[in-house]
Image 1 (cartoon, rainbow, N blue to C red):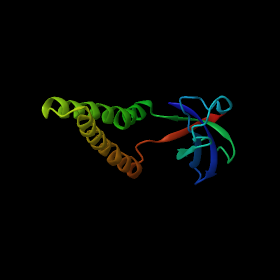
Image 2 (image 1 turned 90 degrees about the horizontal axis):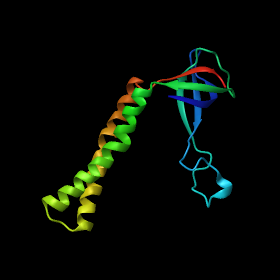
Image 3 (image 1 turned 135 degrees about the vertical axis):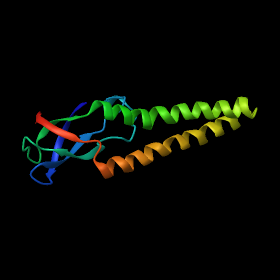
Image 4 (image 1 turned 180 degrees about the vertical axis):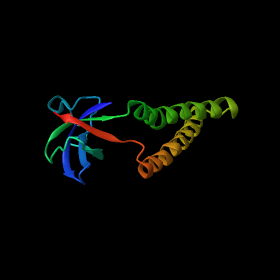
Length: 137
């Protein structure tokens, strides 16, 4: 996966702190929108800096696409599936009404977020998701 980032500061000779502008589905065309409140939000991360980029440089950053897609499944798909399983359990298993089945689905959705929480702790501890600055933008 390739993204454009800005080098914020150098951590050491081989690593830099980068910021990546968070994108939304609207593409941040704020003049034509009532506002979503996400303006200017950036994600900060540490990246390998083998090209010796300096603070303020715009750079191209790569990460392992397969690992990123695994995180996407864990954070977005698993809770979504858990919601529908919970709704089905409430509706078919316990013969609850729609509202109560929705509440069971919401509970299952929350439970589906737990693996993402633990994976985040694991990834931060082991450096599983690594970024690398590949060239200047």
